[in-house]
Length: 262
Image (cartoon, rainbow, N blue to C red; front, side, top):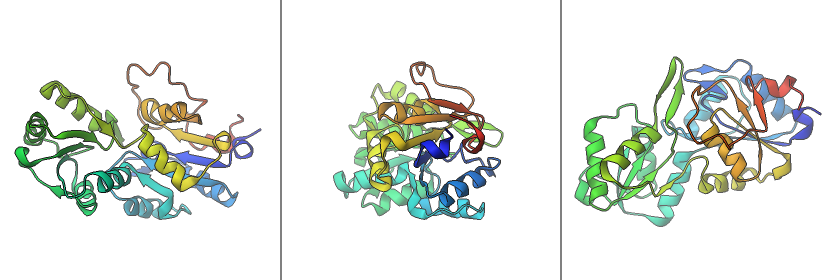
């Protein structure tokens, strides 16, 4: 039995699985288009917050993939939905990039960099991270701000390796303030999984989750009863403590979905 016979629903990570940095993983476009033409249901789920779902949709379309914008979820969407419901009109500070901050503002919160006024500190990937941002976040946390994160990835894969991501920043702030992260919105959280269920409406035993990171992608599949495929096109160094997080399959790349027997 092959993957296309065994599964009807496919949940794909993006960065490190479909593309890496600015480059498409070889034949990923063929895989996605074959699944779509075969009537399979797919969704893309990313912890990356440096762009919007519209940005990622444009990227995939430009690579020739037959996908819709509503087939893309990132942790910004999950964070925005939660904060809109629970913290409307509150002040937040984000270690994050302009796209992420703008999306959170559109959900009804107000940005502030004054520690005494900040109700929520949000952490995510920030390629402009500096000491000043860390200290604003730390002082806000010391003043009682809530401690949330859009994602908990330690690194993000790029063309020539990996860069520091939210998990590394969270660790630094936890040591600096002796506060623990309270909540995060990306994989493998239940908040993210609920968003996937609402969009895809899948049958668990007919669903495969594909990603490059054990502690987020594969962990989410393990936690919520989905079979998983770990691809080796993204991160290369796995976090300690993931020994009990086991993928159902290990693949060289997503292209193996079309030519690998399960």
